[in-house]
Image 1 (cartoon, rainbow, N blue to C red):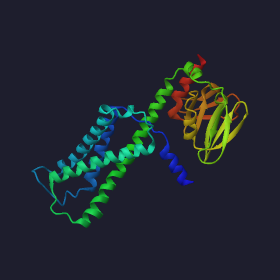
Image 2 (cartoon, helix red, strand yellow; image 1 turned 90 degrees about the vertical axis):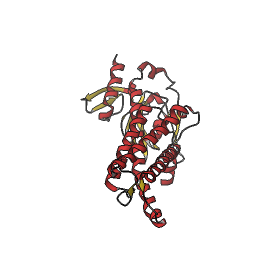
Image 3 (tube, rainbow, N blue to C red; image 1 turned 180 degrees about the vertical axis):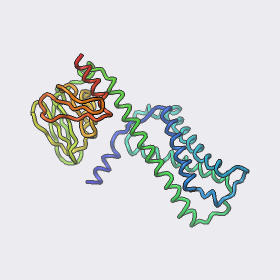
Image 4 (cartoon, rainbow, N blue to C red; image 1 turned 30 degrees about the vertical axis):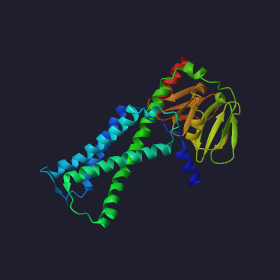
Length: 295
């Protein structure tokens, strides 16, 4: 089961970021983090080497962060600005994104090593020391930088989706697709299918390894073995279904009333008896939808 989840994760479609301002900020953050890391842990063993030039070691250490930031930004600029990488027709998936990050960080690491050899007289390096100390240290640097990049990418794409959803006109929500047509949702994990009419869905809730789908017509919950993200991708063509909480999607056309404040609100739907929570990060978007519906 774990292998199935891992395979599903890496096969998911991944949104490419085509924004040079974002990549500039990302490169700057990575450069700062690396500089702090070098100051604290000295992974390049600068205390054992001798500078080739009359430059303080602390200044040389700042160079690692600057060089890395410049290399990372230059690679992103080359791929997305010059080569128009984001305009490609091929589907971009999570494993493609991971491989791209590994390649970028590897190139940046190699250039950093060249910079180190240029600035410092390291003498003859013992092979065992290189294999069992230098390389593991390089990997230990790359792992946190890799994780930080993934988290920042995810944060940016999530914020962009929220902005797009908040600016979507209600008229477009109502007419962009025939939501009264019955569709089939199939579990990616087990041999299970359910039929739903998207316009009849009131809310979708993550519940362990399942999702609960409540419809107006059935007035009950249907269970499907799948993740909330998977169902959201299946229903992304139906803009009336929007996320309001990390565990919930709600049909904005089924909202009957709401209560709460700017920090957290609860939604009452047409037929569902339970109240649907809206977390702080989604309150503004949901209230905007409600105001548009009222008008």
